[in-house]
Image 1 (cartoon, rainbow, N blue to C red):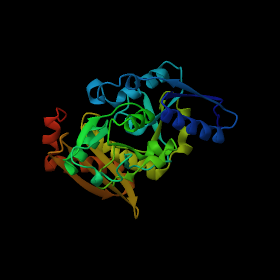
Image 2: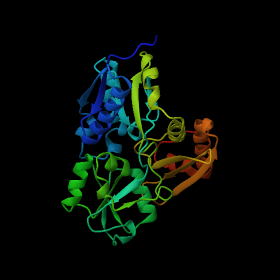
Image 3: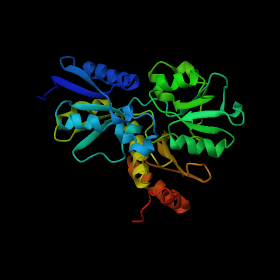
Length: 314
């Protein structure tokens, strides 16, 4: 007879979006294991505390999850819930991650109080974003716009827009939808033109590999399609040494039984952008990610990455 969990402690960032996501996981765990006590332990990370500098200057998106991993290491929590786009491409030794099947909208979204589309924004309009990936694509497609840094949680960013600091801001549609703020979206940006962050819209549950029961307990959350898409995108990111201070993105879809993966690498100023796509069997997801990275490198992505200090020839 298999052992069922009796207590699961979830480590979560204390931002409203992170708590909403953790509360959803908590509810789903209780559906699966109604006799289990599931509690959420809220934590503030360095990424949440340091808001006056871009992430690329203070250590990258890994700052959002390090404290949660320490809580797992020290036994203060059993699992941690993450937006996978914030998770470094390679997990620390001794950690694994279940990829949650309920992937939200992967696209970026335009939010503005005066303009309905990016094309409506006049010359010199100020667009706020915290992402070099978004900035590079905005500069490439709309060079007449002024890009300004924007940090903070979703509500903080929306308040800055409403206070008139920006003409428009770009946020992940997934976060707005999960917070019930979908009505703030003026336009969803085409994922073909604005390739999303790797694993955008996907949730992950991290756990320690020396607690093998969790792999079995969390297995019902995983679906083959979402797992294949996220694994392909993350393999692409790893092969390109991707992190927060490299403008790159990846988007995988399953179309007619084939996994189609798009990816790009760019210079932050948008002066050079290299993109391509590949397709193949979903079960070959990670090999497809590596193959697409090779295609991009053959077209000059290695030069872009070298200029940013992130490419080393093997």
